[in-house]
Amino acid sequence: MPAESVDTPREGLAPAPRRRFPAQAASLLLRAALPERRHLWQGVLWLLAAAGLEALGPLAGKYLIDNYLLPRDADLPRIAGLLLGALFAGAVASWLRYLQLVRLAGVAMRSVQRLREQVYRHVLRLPMAFFDHAITGQLVSRVTNDTEAVKTLYVQVLFVILDSLILLAGAMIAMLWLDWRLMLIVAALVPAVTLIVVLYQRLSAPAVTRSRELRSELNAHVAESIAGMAVLQAANAAPRFRERFGSLNEGHYQSRLGELRANAWLLRPVLDFLNVGLLAVILWVFGQRASSGPLGALEVGIVYAFISYISRVIEPLIQITMQFSQLQQALIGASRVHALLAETEAPAARDQGRVSRGEIAIERLTFAYQPGRPVLHGIALRIPAGSFHGIVGHTGSGKTTLLSLLLRFYAAPGHVRIDGVPLEAIAEDSFRASVGMVPQEPFLLAASARENIAMGRPLTDAQVEAAARAAHAHGFIAALEQGYDTLLGEGGARLSVGQKQLLAIARALAGEPRILFLDEATAHIDSETEQLVQRTLARLHGRVTVVAIAHRLSTVRDADRIVVLNHGRVAELGTHAELMALEGGIYQRLYQLQQLEEEDEAQQ
Ligand SMILES: Nc1ncnc2c1ncn2[C@@H]1O[C@H](COP(=O)(O)OP(=O)(O)OP(=O)(O)O)[C@@H](O)[C@H]1O
Ligand SMILES: [Mg+2]
Image 1: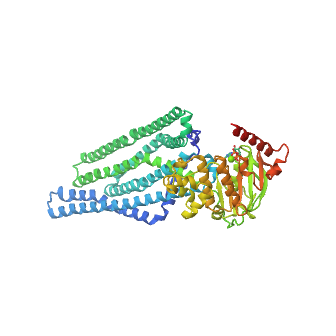
Image 2: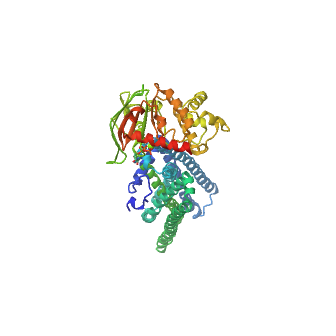
Image 3: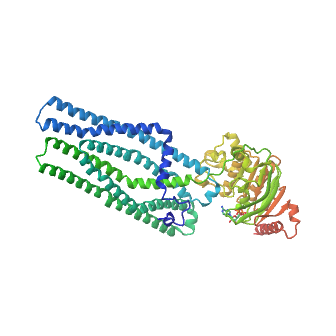
């Protein structure tokens, strides 16, 4: 079945290609465990030794039967010695296995820890374009659930399957040594079990894949509902969301049930049946031998040993097959992790260019989110160091897009230079330390006001407070019950939008950037506070290059130059006075409209 057919339209991340997943999962597994090769092979060697010791048990039993019980030779000290020896070998084997399983479990946990770190690090380096399509809940599911599934893979593969395989091999070798013809009958079990497992996989694979996808969709759905709770409740969409959740949940239940049915019907009962059948065959063979003459004394010992070994063959086989449903889920999880890791990261700047003065030069910049649908057309701009530039224009004219490109969120190689250095040649650390931004939608961490301003940078309390004062955020922060240590709730839920914006400005100022980009940074702030913020920005003049997008034109009135964007093109360019002098210009019209609005408001 092609992977697409089980995908729902909501799937944001690329579906994992199913056909190659065992190989991908295996390579993922090996790479993560590579640093612990030594533990791996030592663990396997010791497990082999333990299996060898364990296989001795039935042999000792056979020896006891053949040499002491049947000849009625009651040599008590030797019998006791034999029994004690077998007991001791068994105890040593158990102890060895326990130690090795603990060792391998450690390898598994640490490998998954490494893998999860790798996945998270990778996600942090993905280009912004990836997040335009990613669905948060699904992504979270990949970083947490799917890596957890990979752990299952380690634990199942390393533990149960490896251990069972070794036990199986030990028993088979012992049987081979006892009677190779009987061993062949037992060996027929292996292809039979393989067939059952293949059949099981065929039946349950679609259900397993589907249930993992549904689980990740459930996550996505819950995450989305919580993020949009206000809109959801206001739009009275709760019943519809509940319904969709219900149907996802029901689908998940059904696919899990399908999985369990395949498990319940195929695996255990069929294997138990095989066990009984095999015992019957072996006993029948011995019966045949006995009918052709009296059962030799030697044969009784072999019957005992064989019956012991059959259970030792069946049990690991059952163990291996019982792991299969888990193994399958884990493989699917692993292939999804693999698919995420295969997403290309944003190219890291290899050069060591630096931002020094903060002069920006844009040449013939054309950009499209989707090929063939350019959003920006041939933008050319020179923004001198220390100047204040405003960007205005209609909704959707490409203002935020232009800033995103200047911030390197999307690649536009060769069209932007800062201080003469191509944008992509500036080292990441230098670039992020020198370029600050206040986004259109302020984003706050569920942390204290102080942490939200410092953002992990090593800033002193005095620096944090200075930045807050400059952004005129100090007043309301100090008024919170624990001042700078007040937790702001998820996304800064405890603050008003305007306050969030002031905090975002403080955060940008705290980094003491050379270049500062503001995207509608004052849209939700009252006129009085706005003027204060404006004065702060004015004080940066000459030291910091400021590029501010604004719908509220008063914010950029005093700018050195104002860029008017229209459908992705620079339509007008000049100071406020120059643009106002353009008869029938876009800026003039926008300005006059806003004046009218303000007068309206003043009259009311
Ligand atoms: N991530 C994206 N993927 C695809 N298209 C996008 C993306 N972001 C924006 N666009 C499109 O690009 C165009 C410009 O968007 P942009 O956000 O730059 O506008 P804007 O000038 O900032 O508008 P506003 O004043 O409303 O903030 C719009 O037509 C928008 O639909
Ligand atoms: Mg915008």
